Amino acid sequence: MLFGLNRATDEQSLIAFLRLFSADRLTQELVPRMSEEEIHQLVDLLTQIMRNHLSGGEYHRLFLGEEHHHH
Image 1 (tube, one colour):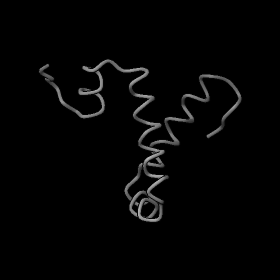
Image 2 (tube, rainbow, N blue to C red; image 1 turned 30 degrees about the vertical axis):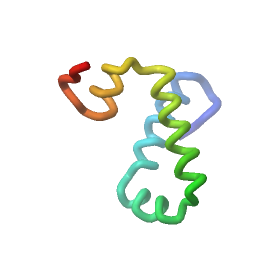
Image 3 (cartoon, helix red, strand yellow; image 1 turned 180 degrees about the vertical axis):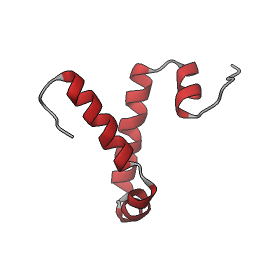
């Protein structure tokens, strides 16, 4: 992972970083150590990023894994 070189490398590095960060072995140790404030800050940031860049249908399909979303 390398950040700051160029956009394409940053994108691929972020994908790798998030994949590693979300691994069960890490989250099971890290999350219980987080403060309530840290938990809320992280959820708020990730939710806002999804709101900024995904339609409602994309959110349901890509994040929630729902193949057929009914409004």
